[in-house]
Image (cartoon, rainbow, N blue to C red; front, side, top):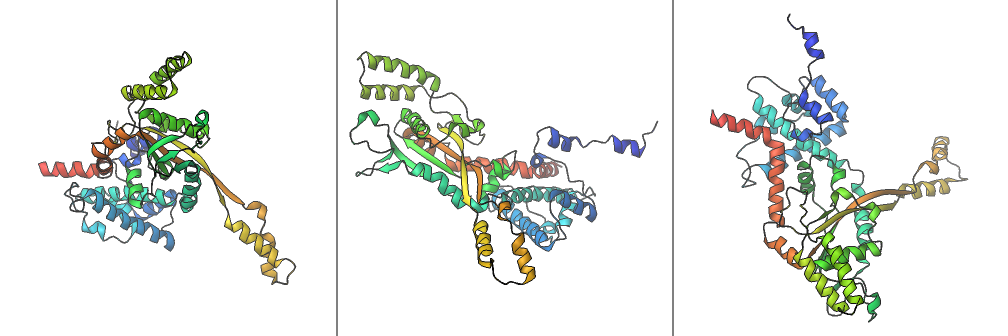
Length: 417
């Protein structure tokens, strides 16, 4: 019996899209074209996504995202701007588009001879999707306040002596019983990430949403030895600079110190101090030597980080509090207009301004990343294969495969033919 079109339609599943919805695959990794064939379908698609392409402002925003996506792809994924990029060129038909609806129908086209254009359109849409998520992070306008409130918690404990030596903690003026300050080789905070860096980071992440970038605010401590790196974490915890309850467990990594072995070593060494076989200065040297010999064997989860990169790394969350300027402005307006003769229409508007419905203070948690490593590991990271340049190169290659993967396979297949 021949299967009717209606029956086929009822039991026709788009298995790849289904895997995106319930199987954990990212839409960025999807190789399927959009099922958008007509202008009406393009309009429905964008309405569901959240954009009104009939609205001039939203239409202009989308077109700006389109132009930025083209520039980004050329700059990072294609030769000659990236010498290690692909020898491909964006079709002129695409680069000259001025209607996002046409881009969507082109991405959904299955017409003969249109495969190349469809694949390019899909790749561009993937980057546009990433830009849209980045720009719609409601916390972005508050970044300066976020950075200041987070970093100030750490800066208050960073001190430099008369010789220029940097410490975590204050000089206790000879009181050795209360001297837990840690000598630092380097302390630095990360500058704000540029747009391209954020887009690139999102493109190589399966989640692909701006809320999941955890290192926009970041700090790095470099200590003389590995034991001091552990002491830095202890200091931050003891002073409540970091709150253990606000640490994101899945983001904690330690490839620097074997804490299981260190726990045993500390207990044994303290017994030797108790019996007088070891002095406190000798205790520190002993633990430093043991830490240097027994590094952690745990591997990092970031596929773009070198296995040679040894560090303690964790992500905390800071409760950010920002004064809402709108609250004070409206309060001032209500106060200034009280008892004054104003037009009826304006008076009704002022009466409707209920300050109870407006937040006096905007509060939210925001992530920050802390890295702690010893001087030797830091030098290896700068000079070796784990350098930032190689990390970035690996990141670009991964993002390129995710965005242009289907194009790469299509081009290779045509070249073989």
